[in-house]
Length: 539
Image 1 (cartoon, rainbow, N blue to C red):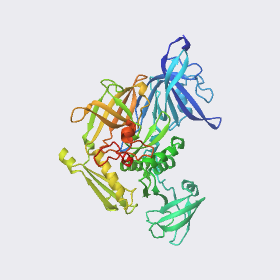
Image 2 (cartoon, helix red, strand yellow):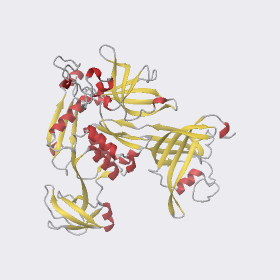
Image 3 (cartoon, one colour):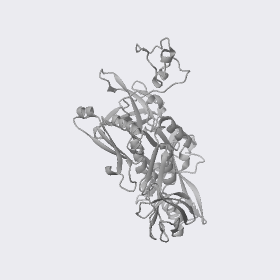
Image 4 (cartoon, one colour):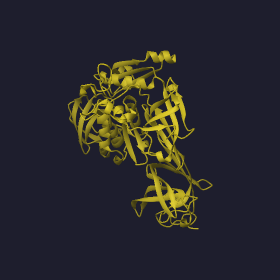
């Protein structure tokens, strides 16, 4: 029986773009695999060997870190090679995956796509494509089982894989006196590991120099940024320093991810990032001197802990999204209710009191970037934030210390804003809402803001309480039928509004959407009817 003789069947196709040396030249070759229990689509060169796919989805960790990376495992069965592996004939007993691993020994960070769809009378109709990176291929084992492992692109920012600044691989060829303005990198081949210009230091000395580089020759401006020119012996390590001055959060995140973690620039919509930053995070400008090579994930973790934004990888596009944490009215939040969108008996509320915080000690104004970044004595300013009522309510104090290399000592006003917001969000711990949605609502995904109304969360009068939450995890519950979500309560206890233009109607004539997004003045009698003077109608 052919594929055209069968009815509509679900099918998964996996594509792997591998780089293989053939005839002395490296080529990119796409290998395709499909569900083992379905005849491959007509015209699609796919091997029907996939026996199962399991996944741990990407999980956001709002206000804490970059979150948990997706982990995808694709189980396949091996088969005898019949010229399926590019590169020419092989021994007749060679199996496909054994030969593939021999001819393509390096698969880490190669593109992999998991395509879900339907086979209808032999024609493949893809419905969803998820983009990942291969990490390794295990097997075949003695039963001929093979496992392909994949993850998402943000794995390249892991501390073990990406550091900023780059580690210094060169040393001084000769002694450098306090008056010298040129130096030579040794060995010469290490020169290409350095930028064309920037900042650097030598060995364990405190002197900072600006530099330009031509080949292995450095032209130096000595004793910069409050330091003094010193003598440095031959053999001292030449270490670049990363200095960031008055940059936006989007600029710093993009610099770390693309320049230092080597993520594909096409994953970042720079204009969209800049617009999001300018709209919601314009009051934040950061500066830092990063003395030693430091994990990119660590640096991004510091930023996402201290400032109200997050970065999430959308495997469907693929794309890295940069989003400010903002109220649902401004995030185009989908409204989810039990009588409409939320599937019956799928709601589960989880409280995490271990994440509760009643005090935040915020250190900023780093004195010496060459000293420890978690030493309170290395900071010029401390602002403590203490919620005494929370300590009474919960019967205990919970402390978090925040060390910010990103804010100079003159940014007390910014620190006040950050600290109050952090404490407000964490005073009662973290709450997660689990629920299922029909596949028709599948456009809702990780990073989206939703407004959930359910009888599981009620006010003091027993009425359902609308909760603003951020989707932190999403995965298929029943393929093609429903999706399962985890959302974190944002605990936005304040009300926010936008200023309007002159075309905004008075409150009585405004739409529900306008009333939820924009601010309206009340008159002296606390009425929002606009009164005789329209100047009191809106902000």
